[in-house]
Length: 165
Image (cartoon, rainbow, N blue to C red; front, side):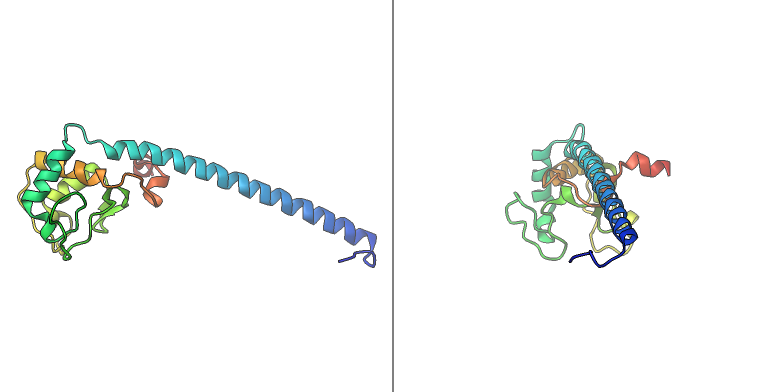
């Protein structure tokens, strides 16, 4: 659209507005890029932390899942016959933000959940299957091996930052 019919001062206003808008957009893009970089670096740190549970054995965890009967209620990838439909499928468990929609998906919380789910959520249908701490750690290691790329708000800020607030 031609602006020749507008007064000269109006063209100046339009130029300043365009420059300010462009500056605002570029600042917004820079902030978005910074946020994405911080989020990605936080995800890598969390991915490494969640992928390893010291002293736990992933293969032993898979065997415990098979013998404890978890597959009666859950679909568990890598465990033969684990095709239950009562509980949620445990595919990509390591990528989930929460356990049962209640607590952050972190190793200690998962071990506690596996040992006694009713202590965390009294209304849960998941029974306590009698795992001791070592078995629960092995099962947790296996579950975290099922997809370790975390997404969502818990991955944006490290847990230590949230505890400091």
